[in-house]
Figure 1: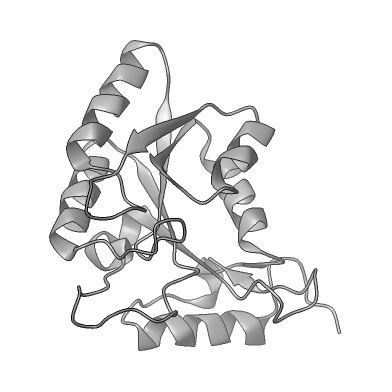
Figure 2 (figure 1 turned 135 degrees about the vertical axis):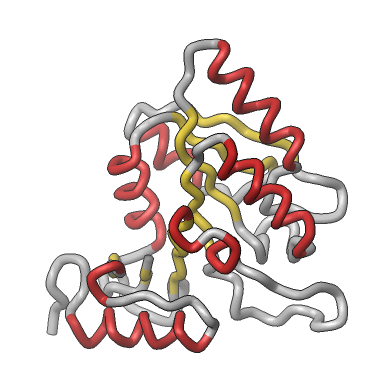
Length: 189
């Protein structure tokens, strides 16, 4: 059967259980389900307003959803050792430049387990970027769709920005791909 808009109680409770096993406590009234991560990102972008910041490179689907809403998208360079998360100094410089030009950056989309580069951000770099974003008043959307894929456990520790800034981060996860039929609520935030 179909799920109600935003996901039914059982689905949202299961999503909260998934996050609780990872140390991210949330409740069903703070969770939402959608037929894919793009729908969640579109809704978050619409709700938060303002300009969107994304790392360069980033997942190919992030920027078009902001542009669909008429929101400017600004790319911020990533450090040489990983993708998915902008360099903290480049982030600060970009935010200040955008504001000086009359922009209104409010949202930073990032990914600790990056799809385009197949890297995992080191915890110390993630911490610096989260601090910079928090200092500039940005809300973070952490696309953790690839978090549960295979990573070298000796390479780096995989942390979520929500572990560092629980009130300022929305975590998005998605079971997309060939695993589920289209339209089933497979993404959670």
